[in-house]
Length: 313
Ligand SMILES: NC(=O)C1=CN([C@@H]2O[C@H](COP(=O)(O)OP(=O)(O)OC[C@H]3O[C@@H](n4cnc5c(N)ncnc54)[C@H](OP(=O)(O)O)[C@@H]3O)[C@@H](O)[C@H]2O)C=CC1
Ligand SMILES: CC(=O)N[C@@H](CCC(=O)OP(=O)(O)O)C(=O)O
Image (tube, rainbow, N blue to C red; front, side, top):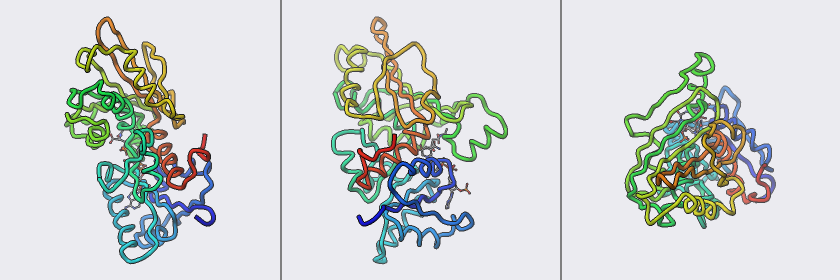
């Protein structure tokens, strides 16, 4: 690539877009923007897309699909089509897109590096897949294990509308939602965890801006073989041994959701009571960090051949 790589963030003024913009200061790239009054103008966006190396879509699902269609139409017309990183849910289980979770296993970082279309993982799925996939791949958890995933997110997870509802109107303090059991993240959690049985997913939002805990209770006797908490921890620790963003930490009797706010890291824990044959797996992250903008920066750095040496701290 000649000169500095160019990036356009479609949806730059939104919650995820702003986080990516801020983090891009740490990479040797030029960010191109559309004047605020034209930021939703399709022809201005199309022209901008044609002028950059990567377009990052930080839009609602429907708008992301339209934007990806614009990129395809540029390619069909013989124009200079950019590579795409999409932050929405629109393409996360689409076989024509690469799932942007580099820690997912051997070869995933390389697949991201060379793909023209990368889908940034969801915030809850980052925690759930991060915990479940190593156990399924190790044969410790059967793909049809009846998994339940509980999770709490900071209110920034709901984007500008939810942020305004909490900061202007003050609440609610704690909101259990997704109780139709059809949350948009369930397909990607099932697929990339390697599960054949669809997990029960129970998300919630608390009255704090950023942070997330994903927790998965387990009856150890339902796992494959005489598994202990130490065995679960050993599998996770080996899986993430090379990762500088995902770590396996000692478990205590409690866990606070917003401790990692402002970071791009994720911490995994196994809280086990072997005498009771029970454990709870937890993932703690910032929904806007490793759950969104931090993961996007990791993927952009890979796509531009800047990782790992140019990865921002
Ligand atoms: N917040 C989070 O924790 C996470 C969010 N995501 C995903 O990222 C995407 C963006 O979410 P988030 O940043 O939270 O949402 P926001 O609502 O904060 O931002 C969305 C942005 O997109 C703009 N926009 C909406 N429609 C169009 C359009 N047709 N053309 C151009 N711009 C448009 C909005 O402008 P305006 O406000 O003027 O309508 C706004 O600036 C979503 O798909 C979400 O699922 C991913 C991971 C985590
Ligand atoms: C608290 C809250 O509302 N969270 C959102 C998920 C965050 C998000 O926007 O989803 P992605 O991470 O897939 O983009 C929700 O449950 O719909």
